Amino acid sequence: MLSNILKLILGVLMAIAILAGGGVAVGFYLMNRASIAPPKPVFSNDKAEVKAEAAKNPTPGAIVNSQEKSTPQPTPTESPLAEKPLPPGAYSATVTWAEGLILRAEPKVDAERLGGVGFNAKVTVLELSDDKIWEKIRIESNEQEGWVKAGNTNKAE
Image 1 (cartoon, rainbow, N blue to C red):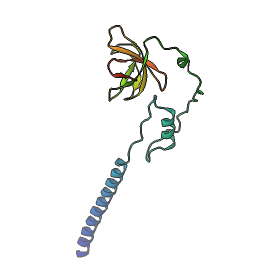
Image 2: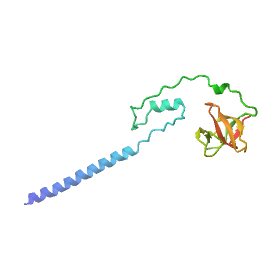
Image 3: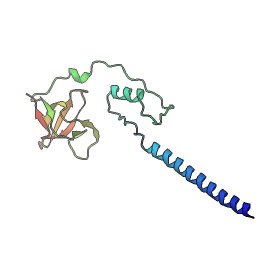
Image 4: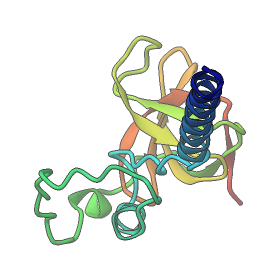
């Protein structure tokens, strides 16, 4: 009878030890997975070098989609915009708004967003809207054109 009680107590203690050990193991696993930094996001308007670097150096633990098909990139050629003459009154400027600017298709707040322009980026101001609230600019790095709020650029000297 004494040996049966001893077996019962020993069995209960072993069950508690196994459950506690399993809980600790699961806790360590989850904490380890939560401490891995997520992969750096790659956006469609990033430069090709950034995209290539992100593809070469995935973050440990990152999920890589191997089924994703790579699209062939066109070979760089002379941009027709580079040959386009500047309108009279156009001038070089830099972006002075610290958060950057939203590039829009039309000089309206609800117009389609074409992208953005970062702080201190070099742009060419092509024209002002009739109400003088918007500026049409051309980004020097990629020759993209669009409208931004006026007063957020500073004329380069």
